Length: 417
Image 1 (cartoon, rainbow, N blue to C red):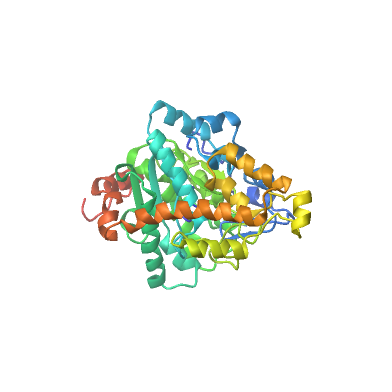
Image 2 (image 1 turned 45 degrees about the vertical axis):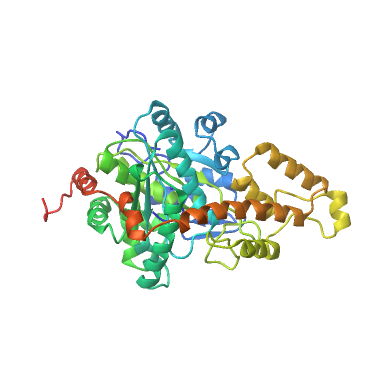
């Protein structure tokens, strides 16, 4: 699954539900909004509430937030909406099988925005015993980016080291690479592709430049259904940025057709970590700089001091008198998203900034300290890893898991049966 980054209910109705991706449904959502959010393009000032109306997802309730493992990404509504969250929560609370799927599109180095859903998935695994699947869509990135396979492969290897450094339990985690695991992914994707029409794919993704990208939604659907094909029907949560939700909706449509013995996957939808330049999505491919997971403290400090948009006033005197605006201040937003875990401390920082007692430079220094502490711990684990092939082996699908997935999809291979 692409980075995103990405609960199931028993489905007996073969009709599309309210998050359908049928062409007439997609057309009805097209309007003159001044922002764009798709898996391949994000622009404008995003109205997150309007996105829920467009996509047909539901805001998370206070009661649902309380039932999830405690985490600032949920507590502060960075992940703010979902699909079928109650079924996932019920399974987690009962100790029944449940899974999380969140992936990575390896088109470049990983930055802070890429890794936060992985740390959230790790918390779920630690607290409730969730099985975590992490697909890497190296084939999609080759199709969608102007990069060679050699370049994509190098990014994949480096991204894998960052994923392993998060610290998942190998007994309950499977890392799947599209090209390396094509023996199991491709036959299942072909099985699912039979239930996807060109009109549906075009309605969701627009006109694609190659037949490879036209086919890829079937691979994305395979990513999301793989935990159930390996281990049976179970609620599956997909924590992803909201721009990746179309992948989930396409998969839900396919699952609703009862082509395979699976429940519809749901989603936990998140807001974007802001670009250092201001409102919008942090991107490693755009003009705005991003903080990469391998950056040293000096690089982090220089990047934030030089590029981070602030909510401060034009002059020191005006700031002392009128105070700053933490709602648009990027260093404060980084603290709020993840890097200041203590709610009381975050409130104190925000109040001091609004009162003018805390300057923009002080707030930048606080963010730099928290982020460099986080990166130092991540990099220690990354540097302690052995050879990639050795470290990755416990996370690969076993031969038995591959056989079960193919059998469940009804596509047992001719060779080796």
